[in-house]
Length: 400
Image (cartoon, rainbow, N blue to C red):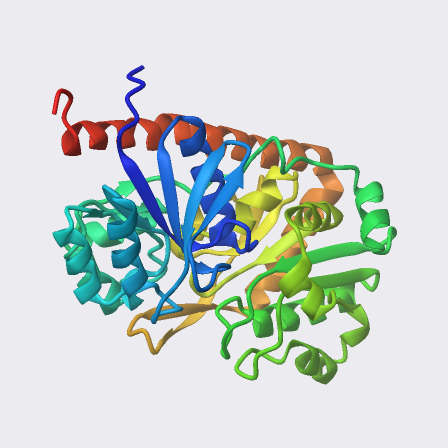
């Protein structure tokens, strides 16, 4: 294979050390591009302040730039960083509706291609996303759903799934994992690992608590683990609602500061392996990385049968679906689809029965789904690397 590695690649998104879902995905991609010999930089919208740094990694050196006057989307830093570093392409891995189009045009005038790798998490896509996509030189999205939605609106996009490191996220002995996490051994534990940013919550905390109330009445030796941050006044009051439902004693919530600021990927791996199943029926989702992370650990997942989530599990084999009972028009000018609490409960019982009847086979099927379809090394080798090499030949032809 051609080993020319002249293209300078700049990503925009959460700093690779910040432990968010986006940062984890970016970390895996950046390390693999560095191993391939590319020069890579990142505009970090979280995790770096005041000055650029050289971020040393075993795979190579990563140049990392901070936000300037736009800490949420790094519109201006994208331009100044690309100019300072001499980037040939910039790949934002964020919701691009917040990027100022003026700075996109300024960046493109440098000769730097603007190529978003973005989630599409609603139907229709939000107007802000469609507005900024008209400036894109290429488009890559996370799911077939996103690809179809963009095509309906006149945009042609590549589709590269998010992936997981199957050599890291592996099944562990559940007893050992629960000992490490100090969780009860003789209980059925549902798990949620999800951001709590708004109310109503897009991660469906209210509906999940209501469904779990019914499930725990039927199965008294059950618990719901919720790993999230709940330190904002605008977030959903999980504990208060659990108090109202009378299920507080059935909730396991890690220390909020620890979970928000100090939890590592090893912690996430241990928690996923503690669960019997993952609860993830979001009302909107551009992908849902935790859905594939849990299956990589051999755990079935309950998802909402909307958007990209329909592509990530095999109904009846690696999980089950809840269904929405209503749409509501969000302030982003697109629909969110709320899961029906009773359909969540029915899916919970379906997964419970699956695990009781054929638990070992479920674990095997979950792992196989990820190894076959969401292995980040396979995605990088078969999708990202050929694509970036073709782009390099187009932007920097041989002999020039």
